[in-house]
Length: 103
Image (tube, rainbow, N blue to C red; front, side, top):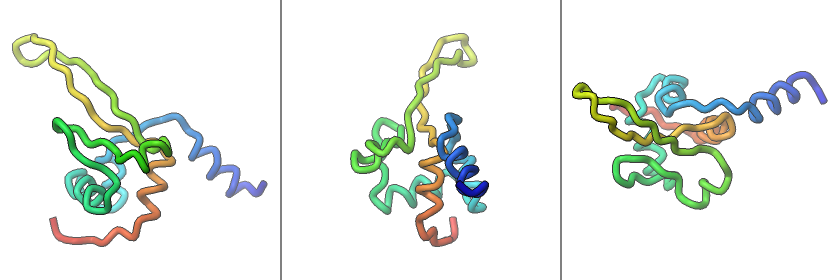
């Protein structure tokens, strides 16, 4: 395998997760813009304030949700769920012909 292909495979197999905000910054956009774009393209939907991938994309393993609990200002533990993308999901998004539109 060429060094370039080996690097690509290594990155795609990395286990790290990233937020949609981090990916959106690759395009000079906001997380809100990218989430809406993915929704309009039929990739994801929002339920109870959390973005989830439609089954067609969920089975590809591009993203996962994680729930964390943190104390609020009164010390009461509150749960919060976020969607995180892996490198394969990031490359999937990169393949879209992203149209830059005003926020």
